Amino acid sequence: MIINGALRVDQWHIAVAHNADLSPAKGWLYHQQTLSKTDMLNRGIRGLEIDFATVNDELRVCHGKPRRFDGKIGSYDRLSDSLKEVTDWLDQNPNEIVILFFDCKRDKLLTKERVDQTLEPLKNRIYKPSDKKESWPKLQKLIDDQKQLIIFNHKFETDYTFYSFKELRANFPSRNSDEPIEMKSKWRGEISLLNHLPHHFKSWINSAKDIAKMVLRFFFPKNAFSSINEPKSIEKQAQDPAFNGHPPNFVLMDFVEDFVDKGGLDMINQWNQNYDITN
Image 1 (cartoon, helix red, strand yellow):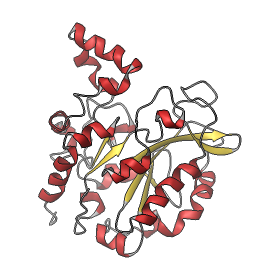
Image 2 (tube, rainbow, N blue to C red):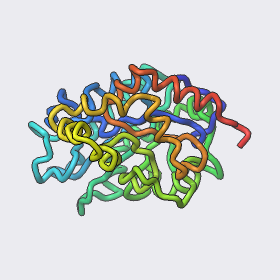
Image 3 (spheres, rainbow, N blue to C red):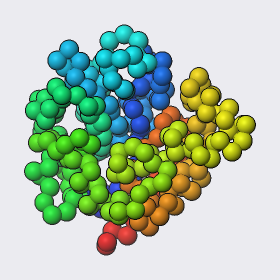
Image 4 (cartoon, helix red, strand yellow):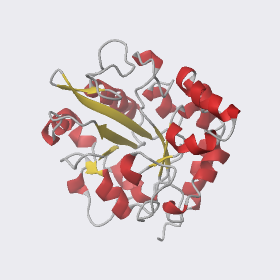
């Protein structure tokens, strides 16, 4: 992934791994990635979406409700351990920036204080809501200041995380529109989950082949996304008028290596290169 330091954060386009921790290596039967987060970052992914909830009085990575079986073998990984994998990579890559998207599950024990307590050890490298002035800083400014992490939280704002519904809707060009994204049912229209199962349900029921693909998704999940992750498919989906005439800032997807292997990052780099930074 090529960083154009002249771009502001709200002008940057990146590929985001949906449920970045849900891989077979982590013990997930129902998985949505095959690579580790380290491998994703090495291959150019710069956004990671992580679901978590409170388990045994700790924040732990999950998918659905952890008190029910949601496809995980063994214990749930600590959120702090998941974050350490990211910060270890950033230690080795001081000129890079990673954006995290926190999907906090409905949980009475999951409070702002608990989230910030987990993030406290990382506070010096997080770009916080209190750091932001009228507009987002340029990427080079963040690198110079060693603020390598930006975190959006879909549940609430905390000292260390931005409330995504408020911030992305208000200040990111591909989402500052009230028009709904027809293909989307996640993140309340804030980011662009373009290739997930619900968005293709209508189109997939048109033929027996497509119905078979839906079934295949649950038994051989990676195979079902082979064509959907092609850059030309993502680019076509990105033409949705809800994106306000801009390519989506964040393209959230399953099985990110398919997209990377087929040249998807070249497309996103082109979006960044073509962005009019005078806007």
